[in-house]
Length: 471
Ligand code: FAD
Image (cartoon, rainbow, N blue to C red):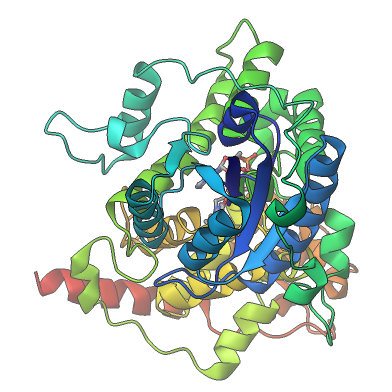
């Protein structure tokens, strides 16, 4: 008899209930990660996420080895791989931590059913969300559509459980014919080659569990206390930058929650409360995806199906993707994204608004670009936030609220620090001139605006009015 722990979006030893259960069982243990790009409806990872995954698995593999275990890598449709692995290793127990996307849940249910039919015991655990989506419902039993009451209901439902310690020792893998064969990571070709665009990502991030804990410690030692103001300023490190670590489950939200409690025991400073509610937005996005598995492809508000998005010209789309729209805040953000795989939240909102409002492009185009380029690209948060900006989402920013990239830039990057970091062409301009470079006739090397702000704004509002008139 042996057991299998199937790791997915939980690439960690700390607070990993499936692994802790395997320790309790004490049977020879196979820990597997499956690269599944074939099962129905599973969305293949984007390029930046593949880079991250490679490094995260490298780190996990070393951590498992230190604890006396090993990481088995397999590729293929997960159901087939799990069946085969169970056969090869003589497993009687299959353990995993839950995930919440539609196709992923369907797959897990199939494997559970197959296990039951074949006398295997499949057990799943809560590890990646503080509040299980089906436990947080409105008075009439449905999912919440608005964040504030959702989060109130979450926090009123009780304190999230304490995180489980990382096991210092894991059961060793099976031996002889029971040992599982593993692919090598290099075979999966997750890293970019010709061109290798990953140097900026490597400079910025430390994928893996240790890197996640370093980020949390740095945040708690520094920006956490000033988070309420600091989080809006893209030119300083005012946020935690935990998003890719949370995305891959290198740190558990229970651990983050718990460490904040320990560090700020007297509570509830406004800054800590705001940070917690940002974790709440992550929960909200996941419960939206849970209730709406098509969140990445369908308007949450169906009336937006009639919205007359315009196909951007190839030149416009390229200008946006490459950070050459002529609007410094949008361009700095898009270049930060390309260089580091991450963009500051305030700038994400401005860059997204520019695409869906000033260029009038369908939000799905932007969602797809972010999916490919963000290291934190997340099946729930990415579409939910795009729909929030587009006005088609739950509790969304109304469509007529159009971010002005110049006003935003003057307000949140008054000194132009962020702009200078990512747009070297603008470095010669002073703090006043840098936000509106088209007013500088001598400036070279920086593009003129792809669209005018007042007229593109009017066009967006007129298109929205048309939608409303059709009601
Ligand atoms: P912090 O400010 O330190 O917040 C802590 C954590 O709270 C984050 O790590 C994240 O897990 C969560 N969080 C914060 N804001 C949000 C939010 N608005 N929605 C959901 N969770 C949130 N976030 C992703 O994790 N993945 C995405 O694919 C993603 N796509 C986005 C697309 C657009 C158009 C926009 C406007 C936002 C998107 N976000 C996404 C949300 C947000 O920008 C990032 O979570 C945040 O910038 C990550 O930086 P941080 O870890 O320093 O955040």
